[in-house]
Image (tube, rainbow, N blue to C red; front, side):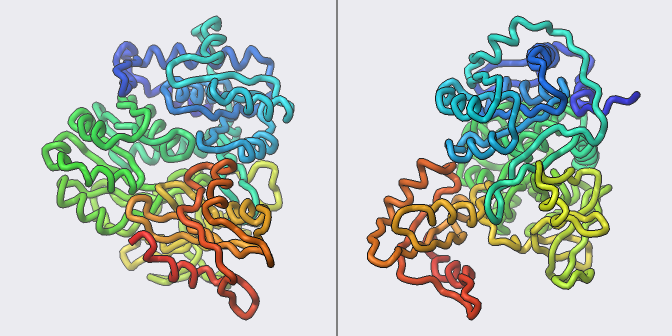
Length: 506
């Protein structure tokens, strides 16, 4: 029987010479393919020794490290479900995710063990481990006593491999369930479509708690048996220094903007590079053009989401990479644009983007009604993005149907932040809108109405939010006003607010 475990496919792509370098870190550490094989086996044996039920979730909120990647691979290898959590999430958020996913194992940093373990044990989690970015923690201490031989768990294509929480446009986050088949099909398509070849080296400068860094980048390198230059965080000077040793770089638009600010970025620095890929947020035409001019390379822009991994891409070869577009639907993915009344739209007509394919997720964790709602009768997933297809087939995303703010590549959903603001004493109502920002592309601005007789302090509101929410969700500015613009139905007109504050950071 064929084993559809994603790890089995990644492991099969390891080079024959297991003593070759698989990962080289910014602190000078080198990990061989043999190290990846043995360490993931030991961690997988540790997880299996805990006697967890089939389909158990392993929730992980740790700093970026090669060991954290190994833990992800070990979770796949052992047949459990990986649940990555943004390192910026605070207690209220973590409490929700752990309560909702009911993980059997939680792994956190030593520094957060006190409050995270309290939340986990209260929710019924039996096992809480620590893992730090200096190769320490109880996870590694315990795994060190386990065998480095491990039989990869046999999985079916539809078996769950990961749950990624996406912030809800209304209310709380939803857990997108991705199967081994979803992720493997996407990795294989991208390996071919982006022309991965023997000898490619990837600079990995992204976080590893979302699709871009964890799946697109890591799967891309591993399924090609390619070495990774592993940066614990994005540092433009260090990326510049490492470019001559690499061939592939993936980044969010903010990273490209910061690299363009480096005087050393030029054609010579990029002499060995084959491909620069951008995603997670719209790339400004200005950045696209400046990059072309400075480096001689045309950035390849693509589009995906937590529920689907990658959906579209500009061509690697055999076609023009067009700035401002996200290219064509990937092989095996069917994409269409529909109007409000459900009719299929034609060339250049703007409507809702819907997709279907082997990469599309299994649904939302424990939300059957929500899952049903998000799929059409003929099986297409409603992405919630609005876009159009031009006469040549290029797809352009024009926005989000639900006022999503994309700040520095991270999704910020106004409804979630507004719910926290509205709970504060003295607040009658609030609205969060996205406005242009030179560095982050877009940031949130909060407009708050006080209750009669209440005196609100804008700075105090922001400070209170900092203790509750991840930093990327915090409004960059807060205004206390007497009223919000509304239409005849009483609905807040966010378009007018966006227009009013659009020059705030100009």
